[in-house]
Length: 360
Length: 186
Ligand code: HEM
Ligand code: SF4
Ligand code: SF4
Image (cartoon, rainbow over all chains, first blue to last red; front, side):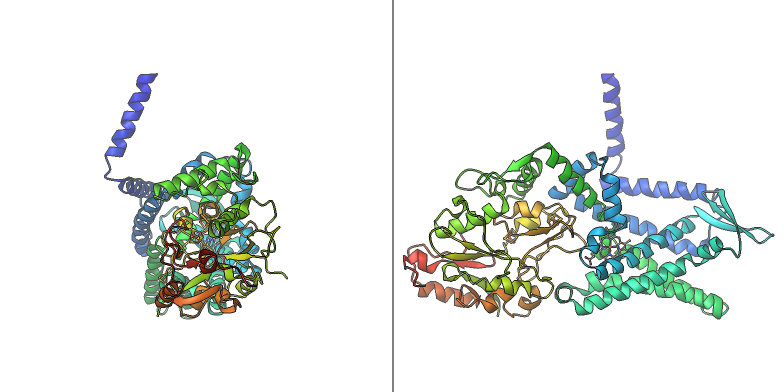
């Protein structure tokens, strides 16, 4: 038994040692996975759509940038902590509900404002649905064949999943899927641009490369995509090859930009579920009591983790009384600072903090 | 000319104008991000404001797993980026002064951003603009240096941040009256 474990560990090491870094390993594994999936999906590369070759290169560059960013980011002490502990707690009863609320319905953005929520649903879902359609097509995981009798076959991973009338609702929805999502994205991006021109906070902080560039890129992708349809239907395909190139180029640039700019929040956001689970789980395990007033203000685990993370950053907040500043609840910590200024121990006076909201 | 926020804490008369002004800053969405405390609430009326001191090595940003707290080129430590903050609340635990606030419904941290829409163009932040008692001022380093001379504190009691704070900060704090033993007149 023990010998077996040792062998396992050893072979694990061999696999890890074969690569120069985490980055190389992740990159190799995902490109291999993509290749295998495409091989199966295209029935041994017999159904490759060469028009889509540019996307394939773009996707692979994107994966490189993505792993580079994600791994560098995961090495930061606080990030590593939440990732490690959060992944262990992935399967809690509340996980499905939290995931839907955080990643699909965006309830928390609703609470920031209905305008911002509408804007994000249009952009987010427009993009997610587009990807569900595009990626399987690009890698040959899904394609269509037409029977003589006016029926369409939808083929996924080499298997026929559905046969639908070529002029039916489902067929029309699937021809137009990308047009519908393009309109969603355009509407959402316009809302975002309008907000960026009007909202003072946004205006103060926004930078061209970080805030506007992704919006313009999404706009370019959607408009050139719609233009392709327009040229097909109304111009009998005139100008199509050129527009197709522009469209491909814009998608590839967006993909390559994604891990480095604002859109990086898309792959990183699921961490909010890990953070929520981490807080819920450790709050049940035991709460930290404020060293001054005894209020339970955070889980004991998180309190300790934050102290450790600060320590790694060479930040150590020791109070004269011997405890760490992070061991005081927030109001006590503020009063404690007032006490340091004035010399009078404000935090020890048992009076609630008065009027902190400027309401008269 | 680079100016910074400078506090003469015991000038504070507790009017809470700074809290009210904070709510009106562009993007603060009518919620204030600063504090005013009674020093000895059961005995006298002395109050002092407390706001983010914009640390040079901000614990809030160091503890953030999402890199949501950015440091502006002016040195201001900004509020959480809305698309990055994952709502872990590490920053509220890490800040040595208990400054960041957290909104459970929006799953978002918000804190003083030194009214970056104003201060990036050299306009004083809202709180300093309205403070009627000169507790909150917007001064150049030279002017702060002159204050130091004016108070004639060669006894090592001048407080511009260290050692009364936990680290170097961009906001400078001072207590000239109390340190000189001057009794308050109001
Ligand atoms: C995985 C699920 C996602 C989550 C949890 C998420 C979360 C967020 C949040 C919280 C914001 C800030 C919104 C605000 O407070 O106004 C935001 C902004 C944004 N999101 Fe997402 N997002 C997700 C997916 C996507 C996708 C798939 C796209 C499509 C490209 C996208 C594009 C954007 C853009 C462009 C903005 C900036 C809008 C602006 O300029 O103000 N997001 N996202
Ligand atoms: S005072 Fe607190 S919130 Fe402000 S920069 Fe320092 S650590 Fe961050
Ligand atoms: S609550 Fe938001 S801003 Fe604060 S540490 Fe967590 S992710 Fe960062």
